[in-house]
Amino acid sequence: MVAYADTSGNDIELTILGAKTNTSLDDYFGIYINNYPGGGNIPAGEYRDNSADFAVLSTYQNNANGNEYESGQTIANDAIQYNVPITNHFKVTISSMDGKTAKGTFRGIIIRMAT
Image (cartoon, rainbow, N blue to C red; front, side, top):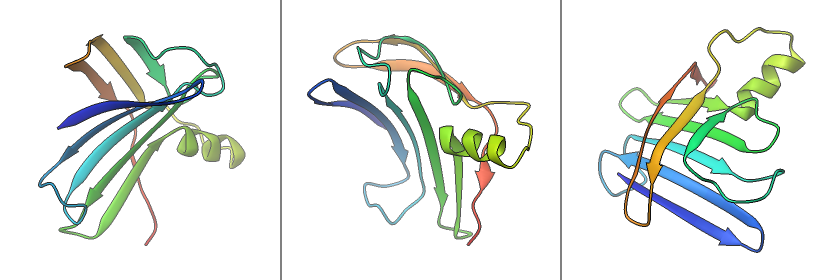
């Protein structure tokens, strides 16, 4: 499990990644939060897939069955485009974060992507 923030100019990207092993060929679950288009810091707080100020994405890769699952803003935007209601939007709550640790929870719908 690792969490890190990348900064490039005014852009901040927070990545939280949990993996079975340290290779990209194994199962993993990742959460990505970007401060675009709102700008500013990414402090502790709540981040939703339908936020106007932050991009929130998530991917789960299960190599045992070859499936990839996604959640977040891309799925929420597709649901709007195809008029499909989402009753349980993806939400990340960061309860605390400092230079060494990040704590929080996540919940919401995750969709298996077509192969």
